[in-house]
Each structure stands twice: as C-alpha cells, then as structure tokens.
Length: 130
Image 1 (tube, rainbow, N blue to C red):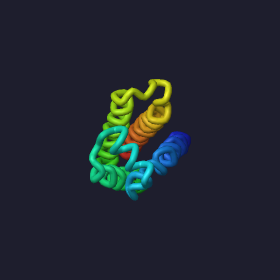
Image 2: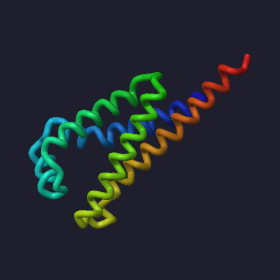
Image 3: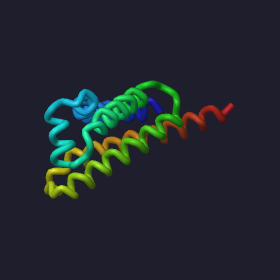
Image 4: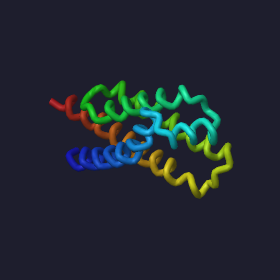
C-alpha cells in the first residue's frame, strides 16, 4: 500500500505541476490567455476566470487528504475540461500532433484516478479485516 501511495502522489503532483501554470493564467486573465481564449477559441472573456478558479479549487481538493466524494467530482471535472480542450483545439484546426500537452495531462489524471481508487479499495479491505 505504501508503494501505491507513493506512486499516487508522484503522478498527482506531476498532474498538478502540469496544469498549474495554465490554471493561474486563466484565473488571473493574463493577456495571452485572454487573447487565445477569446480570439482563437471564440469563448467569452468572462468564462476564462471562472474556469481558472474552478480548476484552482480542484487542484487544492486533490491535495487535501480525505473527501473521496469531492475528489471523484474533481476527477470528473478535470476530465471534462481536458476532453473539451482537446475537442476545441481540434475544432479550430490545431494539428493533432500539437495536442500532446493536453493528452499527457489527461494520461496523468487517469493514472492518478486509477491509483486513488486502488488506495480506496485497499483501505476499505484493510478496515474490514479484524
């Protein structure tokens, strides 16, 4: 179980590191983020800080121990966000080979989610053993 927890935290921290900078640029509406979000993707500017702050809250929730139900929602939210990002980039004509950043983030998220569930399952199993 200890090895699994170490793997979980490594993957989760890599995911957090990978998405932290774009999350901050969205939350604080940096000029380059606003330009890309509004001019290239065509989304309204008011939506950018919302996505940034919700992702920031999600990253915090991944770090806080406990709260498995909230973490489930966080994993779901990040999955929707990353799949929507990939779809949006494909829709504006970004080459598929340029999507490696989002695909890697999605892979790290999936790895973290799988490890999270294995830890939850082992924890329940160990509690059931007298």
